Length: 312
Image (cartoon, rainbow, N blue to C red):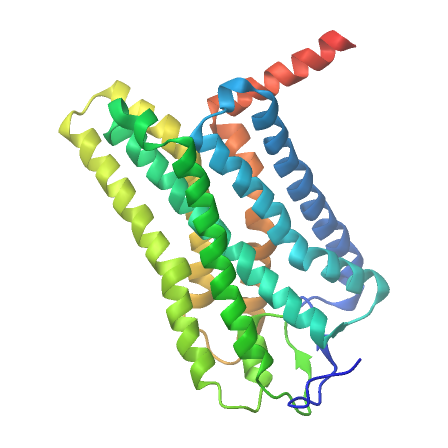
């Protein structure tokens, strides 16, 4: 494959997960089940929202997009990792590596923005219930999704273009199961000052600011509940916000563990494991959280199953 003249590397070697060779079969089966559960579970969420008219609300509109994004996010890394484990191959082309890094950042960013949009939806529903239908109009919902895609695409594209200008000589071994941006930067022999600067800028735009908006939204929700405390009000808030809060906790908890908790140079195994949780386990938990904690989703699933039994 013809390569950029700034780099002599035509492919990278992915060392994969820190597991023993004799354990690969068990872990292959485990991650295959995780990936299939992620895809089928999130497809079920999309199907339920599509078929049940009671779920045609802003919150479930955002949830359907979150489910689709989670399928895409998991599909960026899982299939390649599973293929490598099955074929005992560790290589990935330069173009494939750069593309994987771009889509990983893209869908990870969209997840963050969609979770923020869902928090705003819960804030309006609880703090301004009389104006909910006016504020959360169809146009605003579409706009929030479009903005999520635009901002995430822009951030991922800048990261990718800056990465493509770096030189890679000699060592092409990545101590990871996918083309992680930080792992790639460690391999480059070029000046990475601009890349590292934009990591902070992009991280603030895509991760920190959305997370702060979520905290502010739930702070306002909490203040509204405390102003008129009642068991009924607290139960209603928990029923409408509990599932979203659970997803937010898992999503940002994995990010904090991966990118914000300092680690020594000898703990790359920990980073790989946390990245696996972030990239594969977190998207899988979304269907379970919403099916187990959300009354509307359980009702829609029951209606779908009863409809299927009736047709039989």
